[in-house]
Amino acid sequence: MKQIICPISNEKIDEGITRTNALFGIILLLSAFVFNSSLFLILLAADFFIRAFTKLKHSPISYASHLLTNAIGFSKKNINKAPKVFAARLGFVMTSIIAVLFLSGLNTTALVVASILVFFASLEFALAVCVGCIIYTYMVLPFYKK
Image (cartoon, helix red, strand yellow):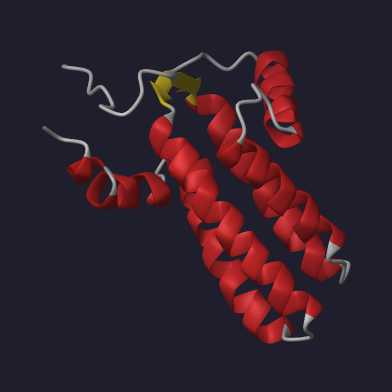
């Protein structure tokens, strides 16, 4: 099978780490509502920001995911990093919106948006289906094809 290369970047990332990142994201989102604390949302938004907008090798969540996947002994599967960075940017925007809604006292609306993000993260964690990557394929890649 021919491997598809992202025309924007040749950087790779371990799929096991991205899937574990999704699990940690789900846990933080649920914790925010269970414990009625915006701290979990702020932590998640900051982590998404690090993954999406910096060149740091690991954010706190991705570092924990790296340690966990290595400890469990998951096999490594390298995938294109650029779509995952785009997905992290979408995660940052969504988490920021959730935090603003939550801090504004619009908890039901925040919960609806959080449920959408939990659904997307669940697809990533359980099935390796990255909705942000799908959006990336149709909204970003066409502008980079020659």
